[in-house]
Image 1 (cartoon, rainbow, N blue to C red):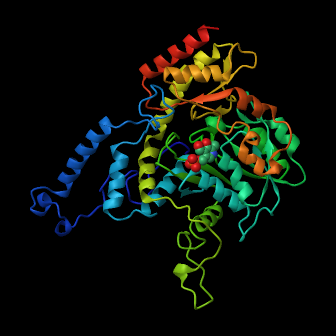
Image 2 (tube, helix red, strand yellow):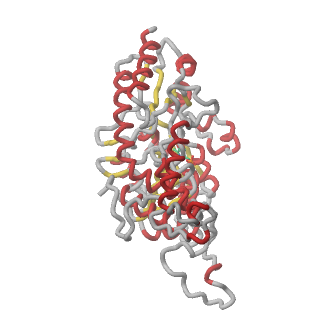
Length: 460
Ligand SMILES: Cc1ncc(COP(=O)(O)O)c(C=O)c1O
């Protein structure tokens, strides 16, 4: 069932606390208290927990260049002593490279999202990259060089660079300022004879209109990929985003719905997709695939170093996966709090005649990544006025990711990206911004933010 954290059935508890299976060899410990049996390893753990808790209590959870500049930063670190102890466990058991925790996290993630399998990588960008290369997988190419992939013009840049790097032609589709997602009419108009794939993004946690998109994908026999890096937990008509096509990309960077320091995941529609991704994730070898390597015909080849495809090294570490196990358990609570906070802020925005925020379709269950805002074209103030005001008041702001990617300097390197007018993307580029949304924001912080917003809006 989507959204439920499962018992993985592998004999391990759903989330194992630090040291749960860690055997300590007393003879090798140089700690005198333990060597002299005045403290057990369990006592040491308690001591370490005390130290870590004390350090965490005085740490700054913001990810700001200038500490404590903002009372309302973009995000706050949501990891705690559980995640740190899990990382300590990986380090003290000398299992820091991809191992059992990664597999365990992948299984639990697949169960949460309700997909066939999941493959963890070292970032959301790596997830986009690997999915794009899956389209051009030499052992089973779905697309040919130069085939066209449609991608919305407002997204994270690596979502666009990835298919380009995989030798595909990216055609930009406009974005609807009412939803911040792909403009469905422009999408339909841009599907042409060379169009083979659609790489969506559920921007800011707002699910795209999957009924209409599904019908277009089926009608034109397109391969569908989803970038869900900002949308973990979002669903369309009860079905989680990331499960509508071949695969979905997720990011676990600092401000995202769960945080593994850096990290990402790919939800997979089939065992075959997962297998191919695992091979390409690590050098093109079979070693991390779930099936045994085929018998090697060439006796000069060692199965441990038999390379069956091309590949990268996009593996996560066990420390990241250990973080993920704890964060996934906390995700439903995080998302509930995100929703509560978003509702309070959207209430104020919805009463303003000058500001709007992306609208969710009645069949969509958004999982808000942040608080996206759009200044009305006829507002008596500009987006930059609002940004200046908020920044001065201690509210951190950002543009809506790339804005219109075609207006970024890097886009000039790829002339094919300049495909005519993108008025919706331009509106978001010129009048959009976002502010943060952390499940750790207190009601007092939200009260103060709302006072700020109301003070600004009240002046007009
Ligand atoms: C929509 C989208 N795609 C991809 C990424 C890339 O994720 P990462 O920063 O983990 O590489 C991000 C990052 O914020 C994103 O927002």
